[in-house]
Image (cartoon, rainbow, N blue to C red; front, side, top):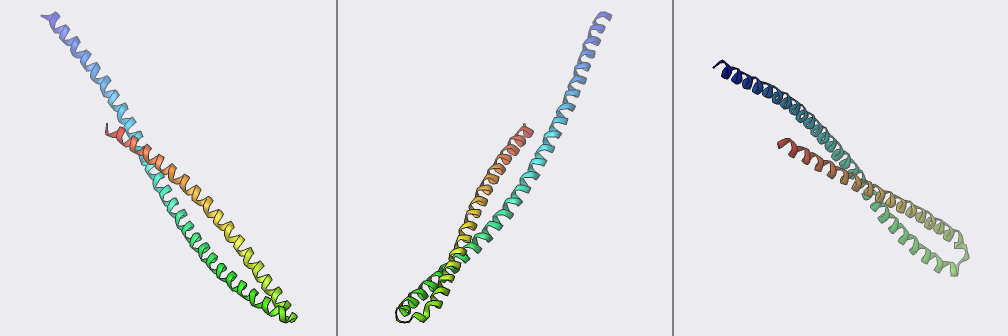
Length: 157
């Protein structure tokens, strides 16, 4: 009988030892889960910051695009006006050589308008580069959101 009790006692002690080991493993897993939760929170914060940055960049690009578009429209109108003035001056120049200074002034206006258009074209190229960078940032945000989804699903499991 005593031998049976010793065997039972030994089995109980083994089970208690196993339970302590399992409790230790559970604590370790809980620590890992906490770490993963912290990682997810950090990634979510990063995603929010990137979203805000993208919104800021997009708003800036939209404002610049509107400004550039307005400038292009204004410059086109100025060019049409200058071209009309050049035609008028050319017609008058054939009859009156005293109009040469006016033609020169118009030529200078056309040159100035052309320079402004060059600046607008340069601005458009800058907008294209900004759009490219915005797209890259969007792609990175998508990657981070995918990582957050994977980590969230791991936490649920």
